[in-house]
Image 1 (cartoon, rainbow, N blue to C red):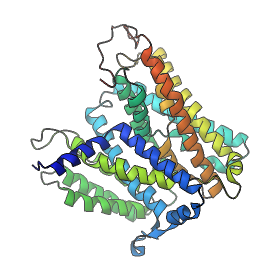
Image 2 (cartoon, one colour):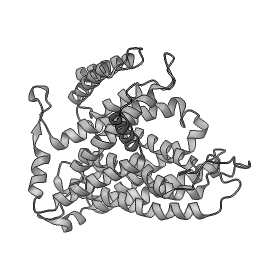
Image 3 (cartoon, rainbow, N blue to C red):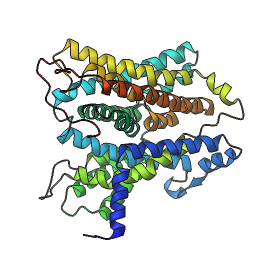
Length: 417
């Protein structure tokens, strides 16, 4: 084991990059830099950088920088999502269907209602061609949402973080299914079969005693390339590879490999993949051409903002309230319906996945830029509304039976303890 000052610094940096607050701050900083550059006198340089092509043409990988960020780097983030989802399904909050039922149903409501709000507004606005973006306001950004909860939710029961994490993971899983089904135009079956075989090979190696990064990374790259060749969005390979990692200890190891892989890859996702994607996706120019006035006339802008803020709030809170009152299902100990008001607002922070779906939804720049601007506005508005609500909730006295199951709640650790 390496015990040097350099190794110690690396460990401290990696630990910091696994914190939700650091991840959220890096995303916000990258998006802000992109917005400023895209609206500065040097904005042509930003556009030229995004359109620059790199990569081997022989492998069909001569992609733009923006495409590399969305198809390549974001696969690293989705690998972490896959690992996290696998752990939650096998050993975490999704293991017990009864305990997971309320956040899972709330996640479904939190995807369906924003989509309906989006569809209604674009149809009323006379822009039926924008219906392809119906899934944009349906996603939740795990990193941003947990970062806001960590900062402003101090003093609230830790179970609220578990509830939000469960809801966000299910939300991301459903978003992945949506991308795979609705945003895949043509599927090349031979390449897809090759990708699945590579993922099976990865699964066999990652469960073996001799699983090493120098074996796993090449297999993962082949799986990603073949998935890209198949026409299915390449980030799906990241999810499937992450889901292949075993979530229970193996071969006498003290912890499951999901923990090890998450700890190893998350810093790369937090420090490199997500900020670069945010930088590439958030550079919406509101000057030149029609400018901000043209973007504001796009029905898609109001549809996305309303979907993220109002649709998410009504979907998550409404379904949770209905389920806990009309069925025997209950929230975890220490959590009441009032706690879900700020949580429902937090799910309106779409950002990463919403920006990705925006990239896949439209062919024209006007709708794409309007939707991207709407994602930024809606996510910021959801965070700004959630923050004071979290502080208000934390200051209020709590009942002995918050989840109203007829049994006094067990003592709960608090966020920030």
